[in-house]
Image 1 (cartoon, rainbow, N blue to C red):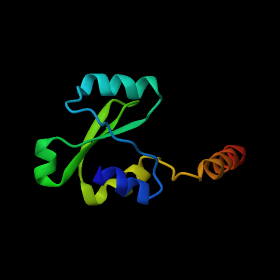
Image 2 (image 1 turned 60 degrees about the vertical axis):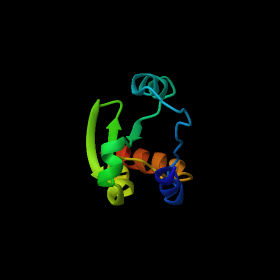
Image 3 (image 1 turned 120 degrees about the vertical axis):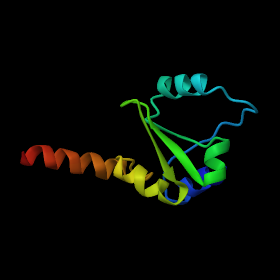
Amino acid sequence: MKLTQMLWDANISAEFSQKDNPKLKYEIEDALNRGIPFMVIVGEDEAKEDTCKVKDLKARTEETVPVSELVSMLRKMGVIPVGCELAAELLAEQEGESN
């Protein structure tokens, strides 16, 4: 829940599973069905080391990062702050026209 709040504070759309014992396979399947591009996973080991795993569901890649670097990593991966989607689309259109 703390990571979700951190992402919300950075204007990044996020949610967390409230299941007692979520099965990763089903959580990934649900995210794929809903078009969610990234998952942030914190297991026991990650919690101890203050890290998290960031899964790029489309590329099927995973990287472990310090929690302190999560927001900057997601932004580098192309996550757009909530409310900025239209601006990002316009910028992409302009860049496409200039090429």
